Structure formats: C-alpha cells, structure tokens
Amino acid sequence: LRSRKRSKGLAEMSPELRTATLRLEHQMTDEPTFRKHIQSKGQRRDTMEQIEFIQLLRSIHMLRVSHTERCKVSKTQAMQLFLKVLQERSVAFKEKLTAREQVEISYPEYQVLLRRCLNMIEQTEKREVEFRTE
Image (cartoon, rainbow, N blue to C red; front, side):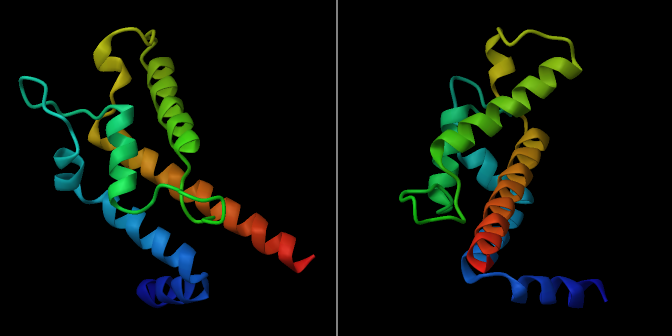
C-alpha cells in the first residue's frame, strides 16, 4: 500500500520534480558519495564544508545553472540552507559559530540539509503550479 501510494505520488509530479526528488532522496542514504566529496586535509574528516556541499550538488546535477531550472537549488539557496543548519546546531548546543569544526556539517546534518533542499524545491514547484492555474 505504501509503495503504491509513493508510486502514485511520483507519477503525479512533473518530470523535473520527480527527477529532483529521486536524486535528493538517493543522496540522503548515500554516505559513500558524502565521504567522496570531503576534501582530506591531513587526516580524513567526517564533516563537510559549505563549498564541498556546493560541489556535491553540482556533481549530482542539482545545482541551478539557469533561472529556468525550477527543480534545482541555486548556489545562494544552498549556502543559506547550509548556514541555517549550522545556526540550529549552535542554538541547540549553545555554541558560537567560531571554531573551524563548527562550520562543517556531519552526515546526519547533511541528510537534514538535503531534506530541506527537497522541501524548498517542492514548495517552489507548488507555487509555480498554483500561479499557472490562476
């Protein structure tokens, strides 16, 4: 029942939104790709910097190149979402965003970040559909 409902939901999406959804959902469970995009500085780290996140989005074809690509994330949006995840962590742990390790995200935070990218894309698409039907 759940998979049928999921299939129906995907079938009702525009091809662009369906592609974006599947790419981002796949990335949420693809830890090897996360690790592959971490630049090793001396010893292997378990966290990702903002520029590494942007490069990962580019490599999975989810970084917006043109304003006509509604179902992708712009570089500015990606940076804002990244900073929001960092701010939420600093509030949760009552830290200040000063230390180097605090400006990098862990794999679980990366998964949250991808979910937010997907939610933002879905909201943009929903507004676009509503605008076209008015």
